[in-house]
Length: 205
Image 1 (cartoon, rainbow, N blue to C red):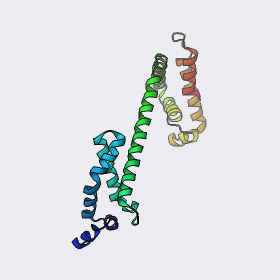
Image 2: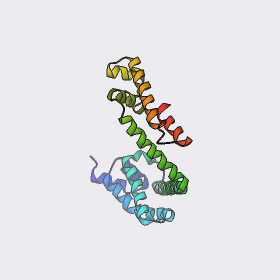
Image 3: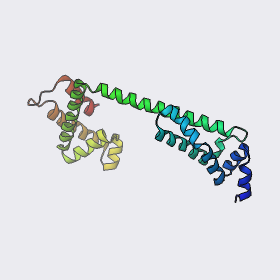
């Protein structure tokens, strides 16, 4: 247990402050926080240009120090460490925000009419595929879903359903035949080459 007189000793020098933080002395930690907080916030704000964010960044550093006091070198400068840590944290924040903004801009730039049309076509095809799969005979549908949607191997499906691997293979072949007839050989629903290729890639490979 840390005695009051120990806290008094910690407050007498920078080395003592570091030692007090290492020893989880709350009074020492509070003293360091109150002593440097405002200056650190001002330093962070010079980079992030937002007082609220600056306060959060400084608080992050103090939380990190409290949770990992070994970060402080007993022979180092406490003040120098705090300012360096806050500035680095601020720069990382700016870099992260710029990357997010750049990512959002790239997404926005990609949302062309052609892209949106292609995306809509893909989603409509997926809905058609899932509906066609649901129309398969019960056992055939179950085996096909386990293979194509769950990614299970024939032997895993056979073991799970207690059937032979040959039976699994027959179900898959039958399912593909029915789906091909429904999705690709329906004269009432002619497909573009790109739509045909997407259906083939989703189901048969």
